[in-house]
Length: 101
Length: 350
Image 1: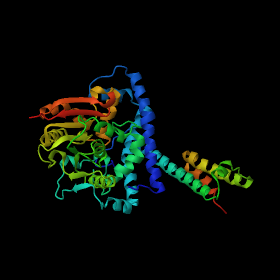
Image 2: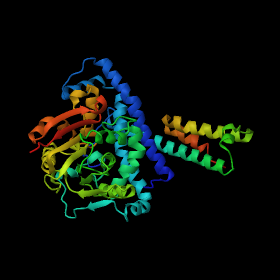
Image 3: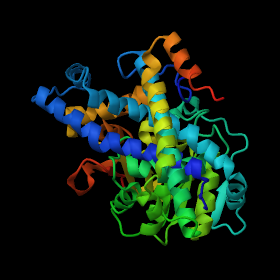
Image 4: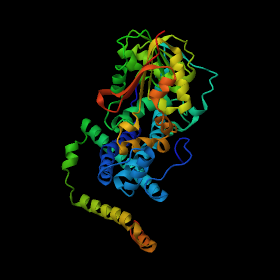
């Protein structure tokens, strides 16, 4: 795919694979921004409707139970992304350990 | 035109503007500085300049990512703008349906566009009219969300595209004109600048793109601009000989091959009355620009769907105008800069 009718898309970062990775990153950035924008819009609308203020969200201090839930999800999130470099059997063992029940 | 978009489309387009802004404001100046430090005495010829910049900035992250991101944004604007305009199609179609026109719209049903017009201009899928709403998609959405904050081509990041058109319109030699013909009007941004500058002139705007013309026609109705829009190639406009006292075009020339440009200049000469004025705004000659800037501009040729850019920049416009019969030829940067770059000429009086 080249864009428009241009027959060949040039390479900019030294190799097609680097370019491809960079395109994935820019697309991910875009998705992240769209989500952040939506989150900001959501907070604004909730604030306007008197449901919860942006200040309340900013100043929220998690109680003990919420802190535990957040910590577990944070650890799992970090492990999945940074652990993507680990061997498959280790990644599988990690994920099997997260099976509920 | 109401261009309120749904959240995802708006945020997605705004993101492109932010990326282009960062590339133009931060990465490109960093690359320019690195080049200046590496090559304090750059070459003068374009081919040597390209080799010099490529070599000196090989592996320079700011340069490589500025170029990568600029290309990515240029592709992505259609991926985002066309679905965005589709989501608001009913409103756009209603807006384009002009009930109280201000001027006329003459479309050529049997038009066979020049072969050069079918290339992938600006990386637009299917070319200028690759989508029936391409005109408003580009002129409303892309201009607002991406090109205005980010810059494009010769327009640097943060510069005002509409202000530049007004500046060029003000460079026409006379304070008033009886009949103005514009070639390559697109959706009318420069046409409306001419109208604002010359409120009493009859204005005919010639353009090949039907989607751009429909958009311009609707814009003109909303602002009571009194403009006659004509679908035709600039080199064969259909306008009567010796009938205009001003012919103008704004960044048209680099969109067509050199040979077509010669025909366009001949057509301008034909339709101007004796003593009539020609006003052209284009990219400034590379001799007036730094080596780095010249290479950045030349890059458009292979990378941003500007297939005729390099050959047109190689033309000697004042010479071509003289060959076409024009006199009193002047080229200069408005305000002493290099963009907008204006060339003025006159058809000899009898």
